[in-house]
Length: 247
Ligand SMILES: O=C(O)CCC(=O)C(=O)O
Ligand SMILES: [Fe+2]
Image (cartoon, rainbow, N blue to C red; front, side):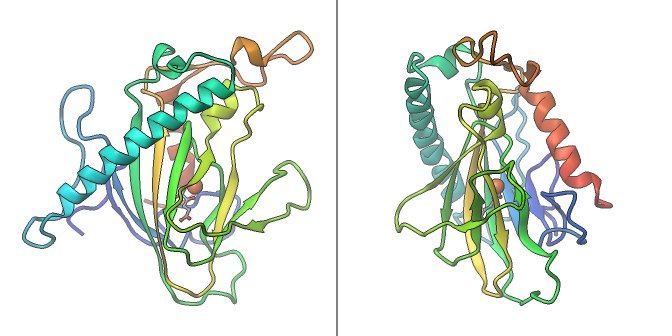
């Protein structure tokens, strides 16, 4: 396909990714299309777009959705800051802005693969960034595990609420808050039903250093994660997602 993934933008085929590298499958069932920020630091556009003749207005629809969900995400981040007793514009002040938004259009094929338990629509993972705003078509499949350190893990279906986003806490928020806000462990099981969803990942600007908030650590509860540059952290997480595969 002409718009195949490049620099994390464009099309990824079925089995291109494995979100849980420990799963013994050839990859996750989903196929997806990524749309990143329209400009990088050097002002060059990294996005891949299908041709206007093939899909008229598709690009403008995506760009318009991107802007709207980004603005909703930023408002939500202000609420996260307030919930942590920080100033409303904390994430702006700490250098996370302008945040990097990644829109991901997902398609899960309808074929049943129930014979192989290890095949997931999306295998178990937590999202990497600050928060994710997820819209789904209401077809079941998405599950969360609330106590991710427990064994065996208990998975619960996420109910669909029409017109509402599902909001996942990401790993960088977990690092910032020293696990006060736990990132959401989730997966999509293969139900044999075709399913569509749209995820919007909100990540800090790449040179933002994510380190434990002063209010979230003490002598008895020291920082559990070392400070890390957001761009380096994301690079490593993406590398691991593709490392077990040959692409
Ligand atoms: O399709 C879904 O409901 C979840 C997708 C997801 O978790 C992801 O892309 O990170
Ligand atoms: Fe996810």
